Image 1: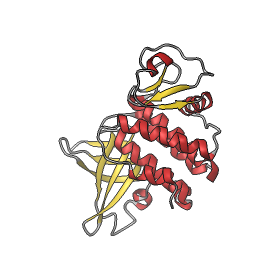
Image 2: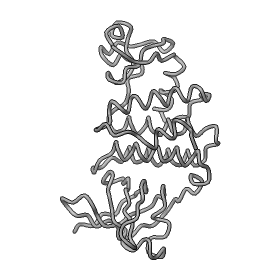
Image 3: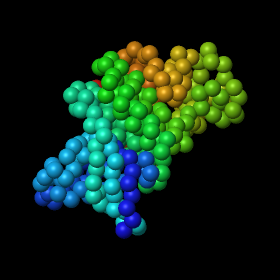
Image 4: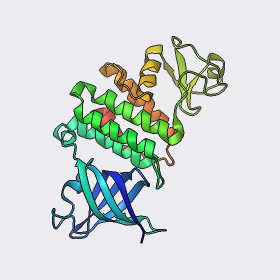
Length: 249
């Protein structure tokens, strides 16, 4: 079996049999992988904090070609991010990021998307409670863009006509972004996106934090959810995203 050594982040953990755990890892070299950590429950000596959610480090994997489950032989943790577990708002935001990444990435190399994930979790771990929403929105929009679904913000998604920055436009998830007035007349649905809201999405896509208040952040959560619903490969609900969006904890 080929051995892969790669940077990885733990995005999901579940118990398996009496002593092992199943992990879902986002990796720099091979996308999202499901792995078995044998004996991880019976002893912390072998994997330590590697089986903690959002831990990052160098994973050694025995790949099984043609199989959906691989074997984790070692994991050297470099970043544990305990701050994500110390605040429930941060934890739910990180869980929403993990859920979306697991749905958007596949078992193939996606180094830029991996870099956006790592940067997003780092920023979220340092965010004040009032900044968790904008940090999470930024991380998710960047991952969305890196997997090929970057929304059109400055040109019409249909006819590619440039749209002035100060113009309020209609955002149509089906079309992949904003529409010019002409194309918007034929669009069945969509949300009106004011100029300041377009500026916020533009900043998030550029890797910067946008200064939005709580009401605006909730509107952006709805916008992102509707966009993801059109571009995810299946119709399964985003449960962690829904809890994060509703703020019920």
